[in-house]
Length: 154
Image (cartoon, rainbow, N blue to C red; front, side, top):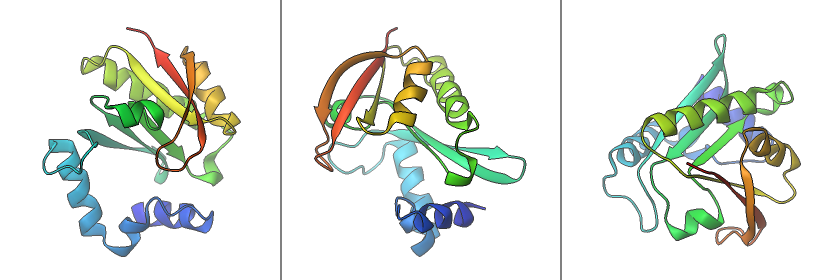
């Protein structure tokens, strides 16, 4: 299930789940460390991973970062999400982001920051659909890409 999800992204040229394919145990150990906030790399924060299914098919995932550091204000924000290509265009990203916002709010995160690349029009629409307010454009320190930062006020 997870491997199929990772393979779907790799087939699109996106290797964000490459470690899951190469070493599933390392992927899950990393997720456990991030969940517990233990031995994190510099500029990283505790976060939780969530998986979203349509029937038995894994269609998307999200990560909720439980606090913000400067680098996340430029690229990442509190919530990151993705939907496999075969499930796009059906409102799943909106559902994932809405549910992730609900979980973050229930856990006490008040002001929620979200970012997306300026040319990722689908993600920008998803973020705006949740009532997020445009705050500023930034530059990703990871990729150099122009980003748009939004905030969902408390």
